[in-house]
Image 1 (cartoon, rainbow, N blue to C red):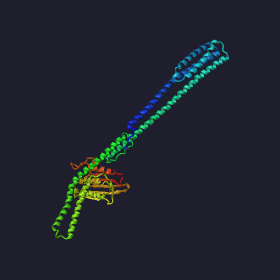
Image 2 (cartoon, rainbow, N blue to C red):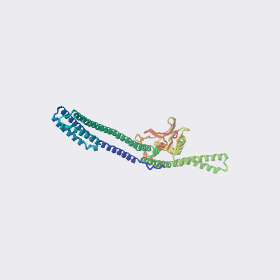
Image 3 (cartoon, rainbow, N blue to C red):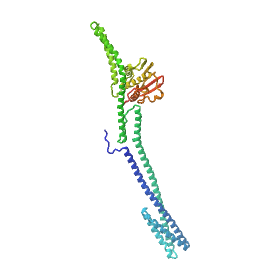
Image 4 (cartoon, helix red, strand yellow):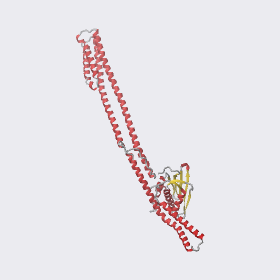
Length: 475
């Protein structure tokens, strides 16, 4: 007995663990994706503020240029307004320093703006700016604009990077989902559906008399338990079938016994008569005559022994065993066994090659032939009829084909499909149990053979039994 490993999992546990792993992966990736989406949201707001800062700064510089070119007081007022708005926007983006890790960027923008503001503040204190001061103011404004544009480009690039990562992540999730789905589907197909198909196939085979054991998988899950239970059921069915066959044989034996008694009467009467003659004339009987009578007694004794032996062999319970069997000899013994049940008006014709040997269980196949011949006799009833038993070898298909046909009343078409069903019978009263052909069907199937029937009402019935010519590990 194979010992179950401590880590062995059943199908339910495997499915639960697979789905738990799948759920954990999905939740983890989902949470990570959610944080990235939040990050994108914050970056979009931050980028919007940077764009707003860029617009305000550009307006501020436009009015700076207007003042430097035209010395317009209105330009100074507009420039101051946009400087104030720029400072407000820098204050608005300050909270993002913690969430987006942009403290260095914001601090640089604040510093450059302060430097620009300091340079621009000289406009209020000096009536005219030197060329050097104006150039310094322009350069400081350019640096501020450049820093803002660089910040915008950097944040936009980061957003695209996060989106690209999320796309990759989505594909990864889909890949994991497909892999887990394929794994679970494959596990269900291999561990559940395939064994169920085998059990379904075996179940259909049981209806055809096939009681082969299913191979037990090298697993330690529910499938193994089901198949082991199914195999136990098959073993029990096999035992019950053997018991049913034996019961049917005993039933047939009861019918045969009365006929055997009549068969035994003839040799026993001959023995008795011969013995009486010997006793009466022993003293005056010639030696040759005495020897002839004793020989006759021995012959009649062997005849009686053969009759009893055939009856005993038929009734004896044996394990299913395949051995090379001479078909004609077996059929002759079967006919001899039920000779007393064959009415004189029924002719039995046997056309079987004497050299045809088939691997079979002779006792069980004798039961098959006995059931079929009995059915033929009952189908012919009291009228004159004929039963033919014909057998031929078919080496091309590795089959022996045995036909048993009669000239009886035939089987109606509506009953043809049911004649091998257990307990189905067309015989009236208690003359039939409906088990004979069902048992015959099971026995033939156990030999890896087949049995077919063709019938026409009023003309007769033909049973065709096909058995393997070579032993193919019949179970």
